[in-house]
Image 1 (tube, helix red, strand yellow):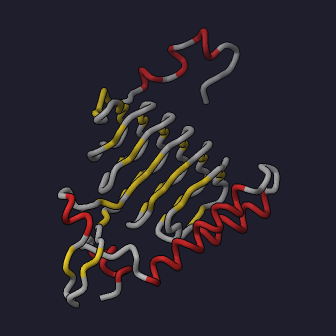
Image 2: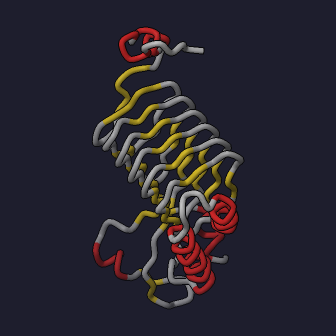
Image 3: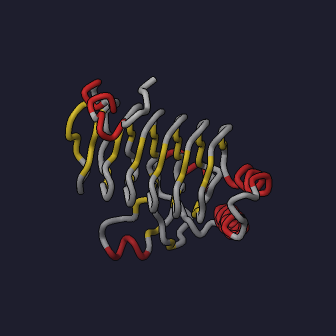
Length: 211
């Protein structure tokens, strides 16, 4: 079984595999290329993002700087906004729906290392060779989510549609749709409702109108 197939199967794999290293090196170079561009070089940026990601939908914008690990394992929907310093360590698949917004310094991680130090250093593989291995769990994020600054999403997490994740949260378990969650570890604070509408904050809404 190829190491890429092991990732998808959720079993231990070798990140030092030559094929995987080649993918990562290519993506890391493209990260640098993107981060050297100016914000208004939209066509140049779009072409680089297409080379990095498995999918990037229409109207999606990455402020930069960006850091993707594999890139090709990440699938992003339409009209998403990623603020400064998005980091996605996509050893396993990362899917992000439409109309999501990410504050500065958001990190999404999928790889997991063995807990015991000796096992982190090496494990005996089926071919008789000792290697440093890890495994990874996918992250799935629904539509219309907003992530505050410095949120960390941990491996294996699914976040439903229409969620708000408070700044500084560390998301270690699934978050149900239509909820406001925050904290370390992140927990559901309450369900979002019409009571959260800006019409109930007339001093902030000012002369604007909720559609």
